Image (cartoon, rainbow, N blue to C red):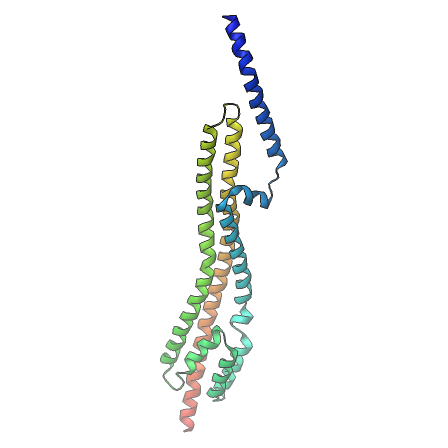
Length: 245
């Protein structure tokens, strides 16, 4: 009986030594690796790469919106004053020419009102509001792309985690008992990379979405005020011209 136990132990010792060697090698390899951005992309798989591409798109969109939604660009006060002066002076054609040369959201809205010059104030205001609605809708569509990125990124992260866990457990099945905990821990760590990457992209994207949403609401309110004032000025100018005739 004792002889059989000794023989079994002797036979198991080489296998145990090999397992311990593999475990030590795996642990040393993990210690050498650093949690860098490239390490996350490399070990996170295809889904992490997709999330990284979404982050690049979100960054480009943020930079574009920072430039496109500047108040001095969207609603230039000097341009508004110049248009009002021309309308009050009765130079509607000059105001149309100025708006055509200026371009942009505000100029297109004012042009819609100028096309109704001489008509009732309600018709002028309605035309400007319809044009403003089209312009604001396009602006909101661009801002909502950030919300789309903030929604998709964590969902892709969760998908990557589920897929990574499946691969981790499948890999553990084929390994020996000593190596299983190490393989499982490494697999779970890599699987969680996608969740972390998704959150890293989604949180800033959500923050910038809230910021630009506030700017868009302020722009919309200012545009409504400008439309109301310009419609009143255009109506008054039409009345003066009618009186002179």
